[in-house]
Image (tube, rainbow, N blue to C red):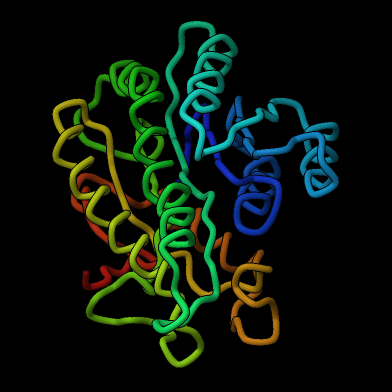
Length: 258
């Protein structure tokens, strides 16, 4: 079975839900990354208490303030990560931060569409731009040909809700802003996969499954426990290679139609 061996990982939106569980399971691994950069908008706020507890318990967890809607915040975070890595590269960038507004087709507003698009699409774009030098450096540090999440990768947390073919869970909510943003994120991933192929940086859109989080409507609707889902996601990340570069994959690695 493949094993994730990334020395450094950055997770956005890591103070709750999938992001927090990713950090939690990464630090509990026997071969855990040397550096786990856990970013969120308000590290000093009450919603980051669980993350702060993790950082106080485990070495190598660095909490960094990062607002994915603010390019200056992203640039400052990239500078801090660069400083901490002391010349090394960043192996794995997980663009997890995302929002949704529960609007129907009739009630959707331009303001909500713009807000969601800024977080879910523009944020991952600017993240890839600012952290590209560190990702390139990580890829250069591993001379073997090919692409893996242990070498250099951008994982964009998407959703099957953005699949034009599937339109997952339409009966539970239209969430037009979210669906459109994830379809756009999938296109961004395809573009990244083409633009960064020469650098051997793996770029993937990943549907994490419908997990029991606040955003996923908790245990009332979502069928899968958070810890179980994230465990499967991390196993999948360990198995991804250049064969999936630019693909839209399910949490278990299966290809999802666009």
